Amino acid sequence: MKKKDTRILLVDDEPDILEIVGYNLSSEGYEVITADNGVEAISKAKKHKPHLIILDVMMPEMDGIEACEKIREVPELAETVITFLTARGEDYSQVAGFDAGADDYITKPIKPKVLVSKVKALLRRFKESDTQESKIKLGNLTINREEYKIVMGKEEMVLPRKEFELLSLLASKPGKVFKREDILDRVWGNEVVVGGRTIDVHIRKLREKLGDDRFKTVKGVGYKFVV
Image 1 (cartoon, rainbow, N blue to C red):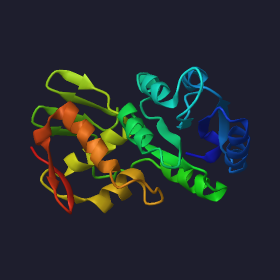
Image 2 (spheres, rainbow, N blue to C red):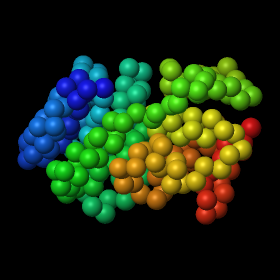
Image 3 (cartoon, rainbow, N blue to C red):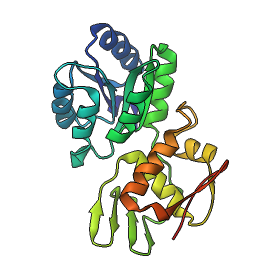
Image 4 (cartoon, rainbow, N blue to C red):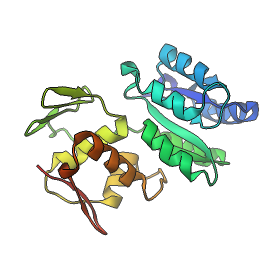
């Protein structure tokens, strides 16, 4: 995916943030669309179908958490990467953001070069080797890598992108214990600095949706998928 073909929706109610961050991303060759509230963000996301949405949490009309939830309900935006902008110390919003379907968060203030590095990492798709099957079938669970959806029994689900990638990774080798650092590297990218509980939050969401018995925690090491 070339930079000039990459659309980024930047959402913040502070004009200075829109100007400075927008300028730095545009200078890198990305197409930048801006919005200053959650309602406008949803409208522009549906219209432009961005590859990445950088979403402020505290905004008028509709906050970033609610906007993220509504964006995740749009099938055409299922693969869009969403990252929140959060003020330093807003731990509650980081957890709420993951629950709403966000892929990551960026803490403000952030230096332009660090921001660009984060954006590059966020846009990097989960890479699959040529030997991987497009579908994984494990009992009553089918994971369709090409369509980013799963079928459990007769129920079809569309998971947030990072939840899907985490599930796909663990299910690719049932019984294998994936170390936490390997999961972070392969799902979030080694350039992205995320909190230590990021994986735990996503595992919890997967357990809620697919069943607690499918995922086993190996303390001090990582996680594995159980058939």
